[in-house]
Length: 387
Image 1 (cartoon, rainbow, N blue to C red):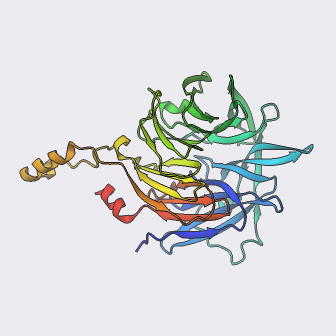
Image 2: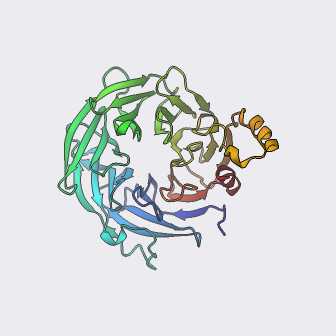
Image 3: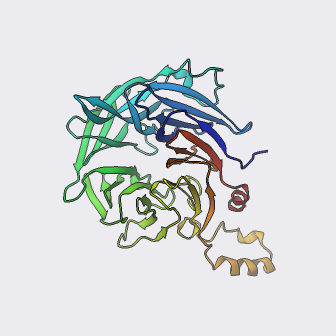
């Protein structure tokens, strides 16, 4: 019987980079990247065995430097991209590269070796996303639902579109755009929209959010002061094509309709410190996760702006007349937004939270002290949404 209790795993290294293994839709699997100045950095492959409520891990060496961002190919289980810092000529640069893990680790549900630290394996470098001309890499975005051959990197004030060629051993720059204007012209994060045939990307820089059409590399919309302070993260609603969530150092989470960006559709003010991360559930878009430096993860039910604002509608034919009347009364009122749960298993800033790509009810969060926590949507709510 599944339990709502969290499962906690300690990496023994500081860490801030987390991604689900996007192409793995059967096994529950996350990748975590470490930030260590003293030791070789690592990527921990975390397999969650939900029947026995235990975590199995495998370790890959990432010797090139501290990992700031990690993202997994949507099409190939074995491929991932990292942004990492390296020192050259006494300057610290943030670079990006695409890697392949060893074949035997590509699929989930492996048993952990007894002493897994001693047999860490190495990543194979596929290619660098060369940023010598463009500055520091803030993130790498894969084309959603794509074939794993197109990605975007954000480097200082440049938005760079790459094509991976020759079995991903070569990255060719196919287009680019640059931020222009006053203020802090450095991208902090971005998301590639799964809508509009994957032709749109949203980026954050300073307090602004911008939308781009990657066919023309032109700006489609701009929300100048989206947050009172730095915007940290963005996410698109998977089911409503114009809806975008953002969060930032003003402790707020905001929801936007990109067709009319003068005001947010909704604002959440539940965190007491910087909000690093916001993520929509892939199947049930009323479920939104946020992670913050207040060391909490909050699960919100944003049902009023979801694709099912009246809850799950029941088929008319299944209802008797009396029930029918009752149902009609009920249907007229949209459901209320609420905080479902606040998770307090972390003691340090929570830099990342991600839904599993295999189980819509399960998510992982990561705090800077290297604590990874796996949690589930409370069972009562899960059945309420399903029924």
